[in-house]
Image (cartoon, rainbow, N blue to C red; front, side, top):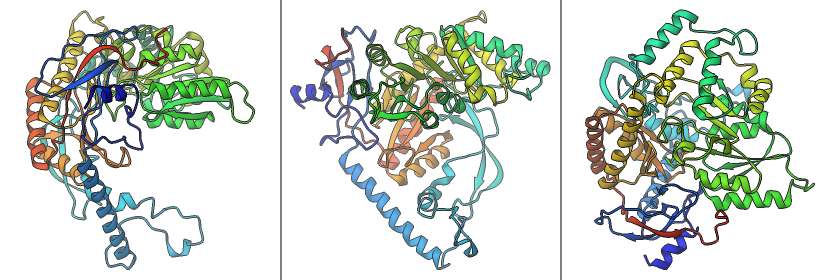
Length: 562
């Protein structure tokens, strides 16, 4: 690749991956997203020293999304094509009762009613998903910590139903749970505090916060969260999904515009749709795409009437859970300030897992929390609990207490769950009088860097930011989704495999979640298994080249450097 072609790519041409697929290059080299211009060299050059010149970023921001090799893409499409052909053949056999049909079907006497089951919509489930269904919903019979116990099961009807064998697979290394800081445990300070809370308050509250379900432990939790985030006030909710889906409709409505990243979580998408606001989607982490939408929104206003929008809300995530990428928050905040928009930041995966103090991507980039209008996060990942929160100005939280459906109609957080959050958060903040929180944050960072580095050296293709504990490893072909999950379990490694429609059709993947609870021995065992299975299934697709950052911004026309 010539220097001029590299500069062309870095100036924004074909740099960001979209849901429709990437603009493929012929060589299958890596696309590295960085705030600096880059030249490329071969993997044998090990020097990774970085010199940076940036007013928005305090340290290098590196993300890689390696192109799908052309041959692999063609074979993947062929694989889905063959499965589709055989699927239609099996549906034909089922129609004539040659093959037994296990799916729900309409009764003949209901033919004049509106159909409850759409055969075509269930085609993928019947003929593709069922072949590899044994890779999901595996029952766990232990704490989902660094290791876990799985209940063994078998299927005698090709994964339509399962039977438990009575056996248990012991000590399976857990590479799939969102247990970033290792607080999913049944011993230690958090577990002891939760037991004491259960003895004092019981398990259930039996009422909403606005009636008689507001306990002193809930007040303590919200004050602690606000202090942890560095905001004026906060509010806690019993369900992370509902924190997004039920609060966004309270914040925006008709006449408002929501600008949403194309890879935002389903809870954000649902909340935006329920709000009745106009929704426009920008390319993933693409600031040029976002700025264009902001400009158009201000210039043209609302459709037909051309009146100014009542509100423009930018909705992004801290860490994108299927990509492992980190939001370009400094640039988003710069655009938000320039165009007088509001910013909604979902830190479900990043809170506790990113930043020197575990306070999420705001802490990771060294930014002021006051620059983010609505800070959302969940307690289900780094805190080993359940529920979610929203933090911000006191006026915002007071408004949500009176208008949020999740606040008015949902039962309060269970007291032992609230105590688990309080105890784990105090440990992260160092208020327990120990260095346990700081040690876990350091261990998570070291484990993440080590695991990612070893996978790259192995030759597999991984996505995401160098500091993200979410590590997607590309599988591509549909047959390899099930094969990888099964082969890893044979080697006592529990993994999560993901395919279409949760990902683009040619980008099936395994997703690893690194934890501070993982020891180096556990990671080495998992890496050895991945390498062995990678050789068996021919998953080492990478033709990666290492970037050498040099001085200068990636785009000479950037409007963010005033």
